[in-house]
Image (cartoon, rainbow, N blue to C red; front, side, top):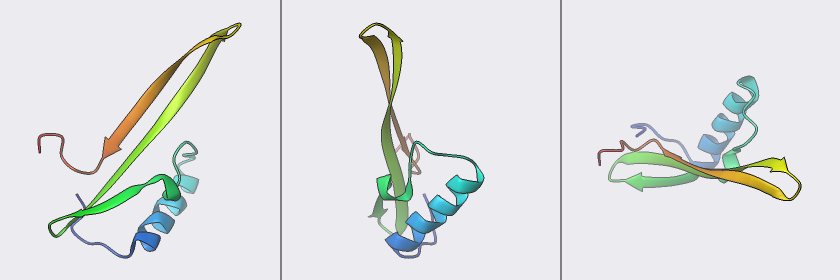
Length: 72
């Protein structure tokens, strides 16, 4: 959970800048779910990775992440 904030737009732009440096291309700033939990900013994301196997058969993985601690 982020204690300091900024606007939603600023957080999305900051993510996009960092993602460009780290070559992250599956999630962009517009994909982030940015909410507040009390005074804390919580940033989450979801995305699907599809992996073709052969012919018309493949598998997919759904990824979900959040800056909020999993134990809460």
